[in-house]
Image (tube, rainbow, N blue to C red; front, side, top):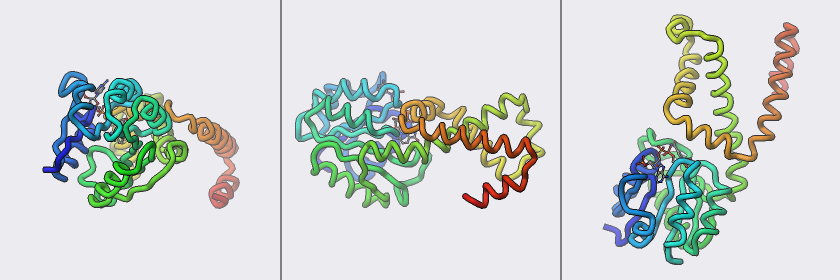
Length: 252
Ligand SMILES: NC(=O)c1ccc[n+]([C@@H]2O[C@H](COP(=O)([O-])OP(=O)(O)OC[C@H]3O[C@@H](n4cnc5c(N)ncnc54)[C@H](OP(=O)(O)O)[C@@H]3O)[C@@H](O)[C@H]2O)c1
């Protein structure tokens, strides 16, 4: 057994639970806490050299503020939030401990770290940052160091634009009043794949997708471009201008 404990607030579910299993397999004792389970924030800070915040986006800043002040300077405070600017800023404010922002770019249904991307945003200190980087790399992850601002800008494309598109597809289907059973017999493989993604976003964890769309300031530019392109497409389609559409697609 390694000689210090890792505490995960939000380790009773979702991505926090996934990493609790990962750290345990690596030989680290892990304490998990949720809203009504496990140690309190001061207890976790007292007993764990590494404390990770893995709670829903809406609760993240509050949890950071509660645990941060209890950590000693040689400990590590880290988070798994899908957005990085606000959580990293808040961690630096809330604690004198070392700080690392971390975003695992996969979900809890992933079988292992092998081949997965993880972004680390250095906040304060080098020691725990290097340890975490090596541990993730040993598990087969591709680790990228980035600033919180750059991370959030990239996420506006990678997650924001993707989920925006999925949500619009879902809302449009819902508004059309079409029943799932009616669509089944007419579905193509690509439509079935897209429908499965729509169902995941609408049913599995709507708060996760809502949080990362509403919380990323870089979404404004993406929405402007999206609107502009939608208007352009609408015009070409309503004018039955297949040639214009083809030219547009070829250009990109
Ligand atoms: N899921 C993903 O694919 C994924 C991937 C990368 C990053 N993330 C990030 O990871 C974080 C967690 O997302 P998730 O999808 O894993 O969430 P989740 O499945 O809803 O799990 C959240 C966990 O947080 C606990 N929790 C909720 N509110 C809390 C509070 N106020 N205080 C303490 N614990 C609380 C829950 O425990 P109880 O129910 O026991 O209270 C549960 O263990 C988010 O910031 C998200 O952006 C998620």
